[in-house]
Length: 284
Image 1 (tube, rainbow, N blue to C red):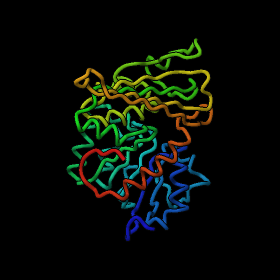
Image 2: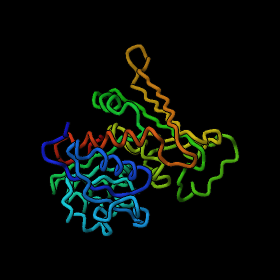
Image 3: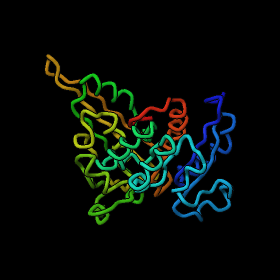
Image 4: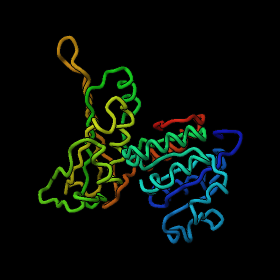
């Protein structure tokens, strides 16, 4: 069943593992869902050769408006959101895969202003974050006091910058970072998106008070493990509501994105296509 009587035009920015999966889904299933792929852009156009039809290849991101997209899906790198996110919102709704980009206050403000100016939505994919709606509901009810997200995988699965890039795992399990998510995002922009999504799901805590923990674990060659721990304020008896989820996501050795996250992103795309365009930032 189509998502809408009128086909929705979708552009994909980024052609790594996530982008390739989304493009494949859109080409195979788009028409029956009322979705039309109108362009694919990648920083290295050569990666699209032989797999993306020439008519769909966009070589200059600044010209995306000529394809008249309704939704642009970013699965490239936070830098694309920093540099082009506001411009994309001039033309279409935006589904952000690189949630870590929103840890930068200037970028977040630019996206909000462009969203309001052009009456377009900023959707943010939840990715590997389990229990997003529950976190949001608890936070809205004032029942969330602390939230910590721990992501562990083999060191080969990290793409680190700054001081973390020089960190070496000399033990079987090494904590590379533990602190506010805002501080981690620029150091591990491709490995902190789940933590960034948690910060957006819990605005009362936000990027400065949601705690992110990044762990290099030599035993996790084919797995990403995400633990979410939250706690509410003490009640009359002094006890607190608490939840701990443990998520094991199979991943190819050295991969940044786990298998289940690829599936979750496709459903985020379908989900935001069902939602009306409304200004602001919304998890999807």
